Length: 95
Ligand SMILES: N[C@@H](CCC(=O)N[C@@H](CS)C(=O)NCC(=O)O)C(=O)O
Image: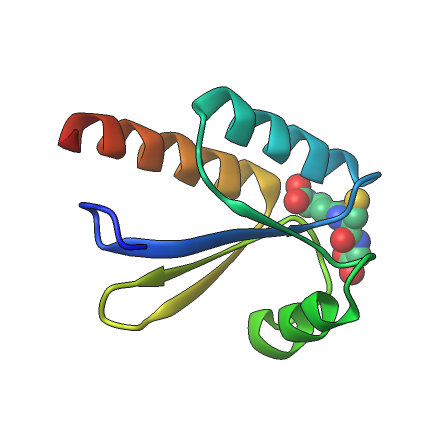
């Protein structure tokens, strides 16, 4: 689903015991964002696409699509958290 910002299909590649993933999931919960969680330890296809399309097996990684079809793979929990906070703020302003 596309939102007013033209960003869609957000998903977080993660696994349960990764502390950086836990911190990121916590922020997603706090912000009340609707982001699909893709556990790379539970589904081999998630790990395969993370490596193939994102470029490396590091988690957390946020994947999202722009309306023009461009796909982004954002690594590093601090950058992901910063982007999610900005995204949530923009969503709120657009509402
Ligand atoms: N600086 C990164 C560290 C992420 C990290 O070390 N993730 C570990 C799991 S806890 C990982 O994916 N290691 C495998 C790899 O980097 O190839 C962040 O804050 O996101």
